[in-house]
Length: 103
Image: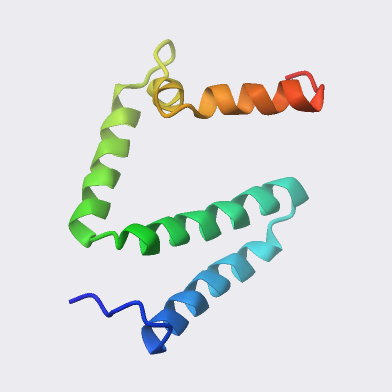
């Protein structure tokens, strides 16, 4: 059973978990990698809480990502196709264009 999101004990425990994971990443030696990974953890945890992700849904997502990786090889990179499908590739390209940076 999932505890209600009421700002109570369960919410504080989840907040603490997120903070602990983010804090562990503070030892990452490369500042940009540290920034990206800490943001990734915060956003993934927030997403899971927002949609109240179930264990079955999480396992299905892990299975999907595993199958995606298994279809990739030296020529075929399925994670790029997945990135295209969810619009991330276009977003990153747009950010590059906005910043005036080259790839």
